[in-house]
Image (cartoon, rainbow over all chains, first blue to last red; front, side, top):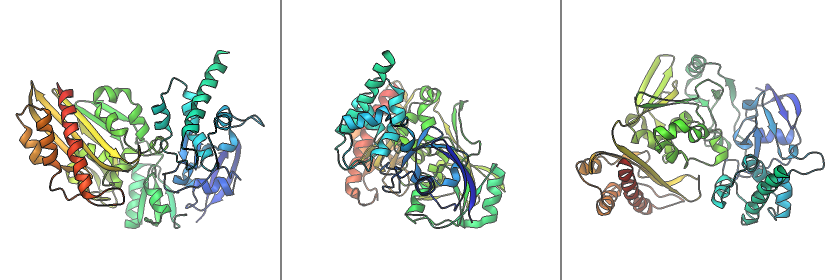
Amino acid sequence: MAIEITLTVNSVTRTLSVEPRRLLADVLRHEFGCYGVHFGCSHGACGCCTVHVDGQPRLSCLAFAAQCDGMTIVTIEGIAKGDELHPLQKAFIEEHGLQCGYCTPGFIMAMLPFVERGGEPTEADIREAMSGNICRCTGYHGIVAAVRRAIADRKSAANA
Amino acid sequence: MKPAAFDYVRADSVEHACRLLTEAGSEARLLAGGQSLIPMMNLRLARPSMLVDIGRLPLSGIEIGRGRVRIGALTRHRQVLDDAGLRAAASIFAETYRYIAHPTIRNLGTAGGSVAHADPTAEIPTLLVLLDGEIEAASSRGQRAIAAGEFFKGAFTTALEPDEIITALSFPIPAGAWGGCFLELAEREGDFALAAAGVTIEREGDRITNARIVLSGADSAPVRASDVEASLRGQVMDEGRAAAAGMAAASNRQSYDDIRASAEYRRSLLAELTSRALLTAYRRAG
């Protein structure tokens, strides 16, 4: 039995009819065209499907779309300003934080609030914050460097 | 991977949720944060015919007072970790909670959900047994409090009736000089534990007046090492005594083999974790 829900995804609000068993990730991909939301493991081990729901990182494979009725969702497609990439996206490119790119949207959405919190995180803090995301290509060093660079860039932009 | 089809109803009160559970029978399941149930549904290890979504009920919050800590069933793990009042009242909560899952999952996972799910190595059940806490439950038949020691029956099995909903967890905090320690080992930070040990020590001067030891990963549910607890009463703790107590607590445990570790390895881990937790809790009690 399908039910009616309303979602706001990357500033677009739509009411749609969904089967209760449809996962948020599935609805984001197929109803909203957000193909940057990646299914990895579908059981909460890899973090590839991370999106923001009402401002908080959340695994979209561990949420039913029906649970998110009335909520605001931001995916990797929603963080750039037009053609201008988000500073964390730029840092991933500059620091070789990605190779095949499959895990990248999840890493970026998981680490965005951490970067925006600022402060002086240690290497251990950064690695703890990304402990729910798996990358099979980079060996993580480039990702840690990208997060560190994004925090530093933010700080220097604030001081400029 | 997609879950099997089910009916979905959002409960608008505890009474409503209880009524839905009573009407639906044993095939219905409660959906709180969903961070354990949804993976099991994705893998089709669980196929409930109906989900009663309680995620928006006002059962969230932390109360500290009169020697107890009360955590609402829908309190997210993140809220417990971030609560400054709780950290000041009893540091063992934050120490235990930092082992729970990964940061993203902590934003959604709930205290009541973890307890109802009763994974054999979940942290909150172990903490409940360690601190002699209670599980508050409601149903259409009324409310009751269940002692943690009576609640966890085995892997994914509890004393909860099919029509009951957990509303809160309640933990007594020891009155005098006491210290606690929770230690766990997992393959990757936030993964399922291989083994964990929780300890509380109460002291008068150098002498132990009361000790509690709970092991996770030693059996299909958290177990107390009651005989070792009794043997520590009146003693002074040192490294030799802690090591012996750790060995005694872990020996003869059934434990289990799985893809991550053998039962034998788990027993040796439990001995070491218990020994270290005893020393730390004793020091913190001073």
